[in-house]
Image (cartoon, rainbow, N blue to C red; front, side, top):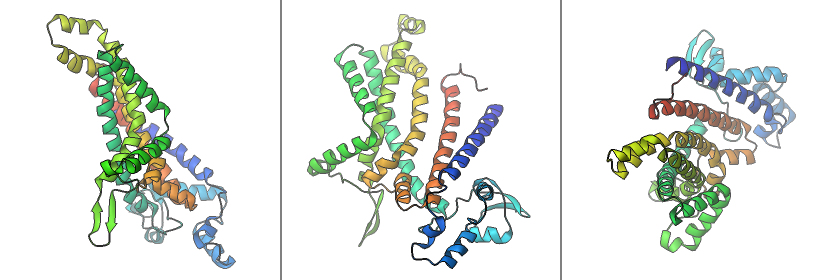
Length: 345
């Protein structure tokens, strides 16, 4: 287990290093950051000072080294720089282990890490709710379709899953918002838009879980369709194995054979979809959050792009990449737990 984790963590560092390079050079040339910070009315002297403060007066390769120094877990800072940037970590002299510094927002002047930390719980809750919905319904429909192969239940499940895969999330978001939030609002009482918390002038901050329903359904449709098809095909393959026929021959009930023996061995490809799609949901919630006004990482990133607030956008991309790395490691560990035949190497 330990050698496997070390190898995966090293791979993860290489992936993150590649993402850092891409993110830095991708956002070069999209406007002058000094001008974005001060606005269009700033004088040349002030812009010059801001460019010096943001190290924009240095060559690109030096800017890249400074950026890597900021976002990496190891860093070199003077005491004054640590106080100025509010760097948290353990330092011996000017070198230390620290939390990544994602710099400051051009618009709010707050640390990007603080901005992302405020929005992250809402995105995780949305993605987790969508994934739980997709797992429960998808596995159930997949098992039913496999058991009732070539019946109307099987045909309906396959047809519905094909539609779910084909429909983009932003399109389904608009359809569901219009249908349940507008046309059927008198029956559902679901709002078109809204976030986890809403501010009331009299009662203050209020939890609004009903605002989670439509975006979670929208976000969960595509992974639900994938999980349904994978569960169905994997179950059909497992149900034709010799040990399943042996279990029936021993007198075990159909329920025990299906859920204790067949389903467990059919879950490996489903777990691959679940873990991969959970990371995908964290990244793919951008448009869904924007459509439904859900204050998470996605809506934050879209708003930052509109305002050319590149530190926030770059920070959200790095955070999303980190989630992909972590989720893939967890997925490999889950494979070995569910199926002992798989060895971690």
